[in-house]
Length: 338
Ligand code: KG4
Ligand code: ZN
Image (tube, rainbow, N blue to C red; front, side):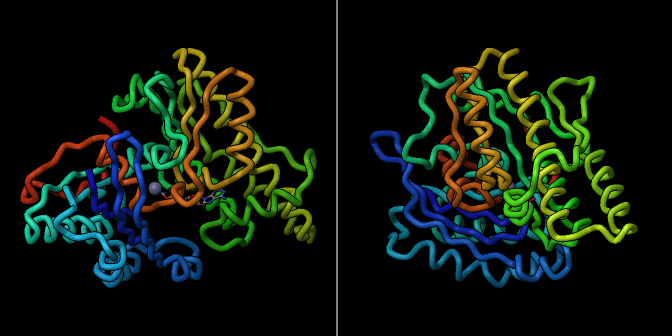
């Protein structure tokens, strides 16, 4: 099976060709990503209108580049993200996919962006196998933090998530307080490497619903500490590194504690991560170490497939191959888990 996949849910414009051969292995032939991040880093966050305008310009050249030497006749279907995300951005990808499905007379496979983050794991050399299930997937992205129980490769049952900010948002909003440009996650990871343990400690939220998360209190605690240090004239560069260390540890402790508690309750064999925050090497190393302690298998997407990309949408389209007539497809910015 060969898929042309399209992803435009946030600020990336991406197209990919993904195949699944006789042996069941996925293969990423091309994965082209154009981003308007440079524009957003100047404004401290994504302005939806700006993102969508750039995507409308990027869409056709990105698809053309992804197609490269792939004959159109050899494409079986078009997979496209139809939600969740920014409506203007989603519409660019969805309408492009519908146009191609009509002109080329191909089926269209609607893909939930969040499924894409999970199935990014299937693009690796060593992908999850049937024997790795039941599994627990944790999605940590800029817009979402969700725990999903997977009885098998294709069944996804949401069991918990954030009540306020997403994990990536906690990085981005705290980073903004520290004067870091958007997205702050990668900079905080870098600064945390030079930070020291024990200089600052931020609270770990505990909720009465055991599989949920909350990160908004952390942001408030960071704001208070930053204001205090600024008023004393003490917010030096080394202090910023120590703050980044403490902030990152607080986020990761909360993610680890809740995920492994759920893993034990649900008796899973495997932990799967997905989403942009998994680009953070400290996070994946910590999860891998705890998974090993608990005797659980562990998967995290390759770095190039962790932040938004169309390859993961192609993988999800292959795993959840439920085509629609193109006339029936609508973007759904509020889409979530069933
Ligand atoms: O999955 P993604 O590309 O977009 C959404 O679907 O939201 O995730 C983007 C998020 C941003 O919040 C960004 O700060 C975070 O992923 N991120 C990181 C790192 N790289 C990206 N967070 C922590 N450490 C990183 N190295
Ligand atoms: Zn995403």
